[in-house]
Image (cartoon, rainbow, N blue to C red):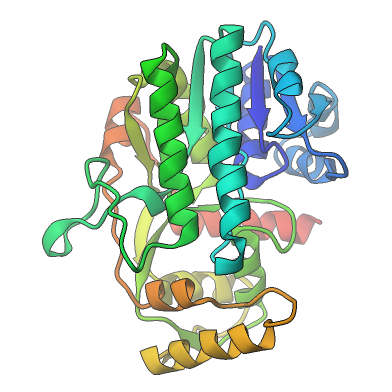
Length: 333
């Protein structure tokens, strides 16, 4: 039996789907008021018997701050997949980021220790991977360095990893995965779905930087294998393809029959953009671009994902395959 947090998110829903395909019994944490219908739609996207698979999930109402619920949910559980997290680059969310990502992770690993869970897989992020020297691809050994440009999100995820390592020192067997941008079917307006939905409406502009994309199906498969095949205390980057934003934006735009973007967004325009958004949302609302996202959009970021790929002898899907999967889901729904 397995326990999953963040089960209605892109990563969590795909982990649940992968576990059910293996015949595992799944408990999933559900915040009060959350809509689980997205999970059923994802399963119906992949499987003719998706609705029946969905009914096999045992949802447990609670949150990361209720220790009693967490301990009860983990009774008799073999593996825990901690996928729940807050993702935000709005500096106003600093306190919430710490509470959800750091305190929430501490509560999960504490409950796992107290209930005798066999193994735990913690979902971190490439945000905690430091820059490699001389423009080389960063890998798991690239240590996170706190600096003026560090986002509150990155800081919270790095501190969450420390909580996992603290639990490892106390006897928990745990692995950490660091996925890049995860593309997969999910709820509208959340995570990478926001990027895809906006670009599919059409855009002439692209930023100068680069990033990496991983298909949610691959992330889930890797996690369900690394929890037993990985080494406790190790980090594993989950990388499908490194590519410039121009190529990524082109893939997404073309998927909707829109022309490829041709105009480079200069740095001054991005700087003006985040300042304008900060003023627009001064008294409420969420900014479409922040200081951190504006500045990282122009930076080249490349990651070396061979550690997990070689260990698992696994081929990760390309960005084109990942985008096509999301598009197929959108067209189905």
